[in-house]
Amino acid sequence: MKICSMLLVCCLLSGIAFAQSKEEKAVATQVELLRKAMVDADKVTLEKVSDEKLSYGHSSGKIEDKTTFVSNIVNGKSDFVTIDLSEQKIAITGNTAIVRHTFSADTNDGGVAGHVKLYILLVWGKSGGQWKLLARQAVKVPA
Image (cartoon, rainbow, N blue to C red; front, side, top):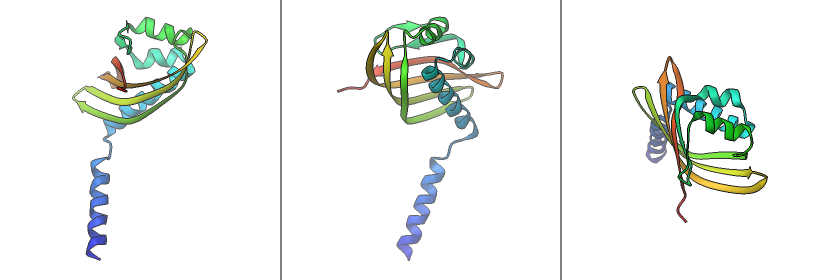
């Protein structure tokens, strides 16, 4: 009986440790909006969740501003067929949120099918009560 009680307490404590705050949930919602907008090539949502000063870094080293990022998604230059995010962690300090996750996607860039698996760092800023994407950097998952 003592072992069952201890296991129950451990399970409850671990659940508390992994519970997201209200702000973490808000950021997670924005990350999901971004993911879906990238797959759907949804210009309105991409512009809404991205800050005007967005710095969007690719694993190739290429850096895009907001206009280029949105344009490349909408015109199909960067065509995401599917995007799956895993192992997401969110840390918030004041009005800044740092999100890390593993990004797996099927692509069709320029009509050429492909697959990418990357580690992503997103930096979100809260302004006027809204979380907006300030920066993104991707790196290739080591082999």
